[in-house]
Amino acid sequence: MRVVTGKAKGRKLKSVPGGGTRPITDRAKSALFSIIGDRIVGARFLDLFAGTGQVGIEALSRGAAEAVFVEQGQAALRTIRENLALTGLAGSARVIRADVFAFLRREPEPFDYIYIAPPQYQGLWAATLQVLDATPDWLAPDGCAIAQIHPREYQDLLLGHLALTDQRRYGSVMLCFYARQ
Image 1 (cartoon, rainbow, N blue to C red):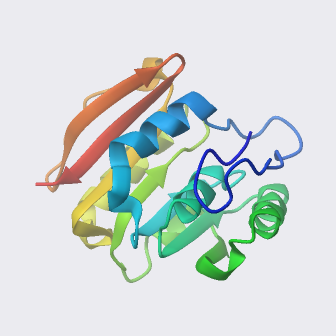
Image 2 (cartoon, one colour):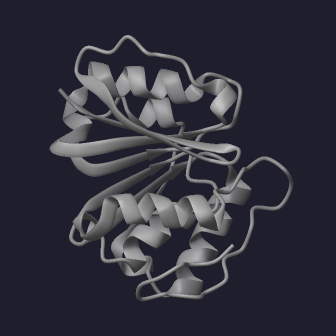
C-alpha cells in the first residue's frame, strides 16, 4: 500500500493491525483518481470509515485543499495519524474520532468529494448514502459521493436528492459515483 502520485508519491503506508479494514487496491485507487482528475486540486475531501486513511491521503498528495478522516476504531485512528506523519500531509488534515452516523448528524459542511468505504456486507454503504440523501448539504452542488463496495453488495437505492452517475468495477472492488440531482 503506497501513495500513487503527487507530493507524497511512492511513500509506503502502514496498515491497520488485525483484519478489520479492507484497503482499496492500488489499481482501483489509481483508477478512482484518474476519473476525478484535476478536479481534486483545491477540493475538500471527506473520508468516511477512513481505515488506513490512504484514499484521503492520496487526495491530499494530489492537491486537495483539505481532507477530513472520520473513523471510530482506535487502531485505525493511530494508523491514519502515523500515515499522515509519514507523508508530511498532516497540516491539511483533520482526523475525527466518531461514529460516521453520529458525525453526519452534525451541522452539514459541504465537501467536493465524500468517500464511503465501510466494512463489507453490513449495508453500511447504503445507509450512509441514505443519510447523505436526507441531508444533501454535506455534498457541494457539483460534488460527488463515492462508495467502495464489493460488487455482490450492490443494490439500487431509492434516493431523492442523489443519483447514481457512474459505476466501475476493478476485480473485487466496485466504485459507485453519486451526484446531487
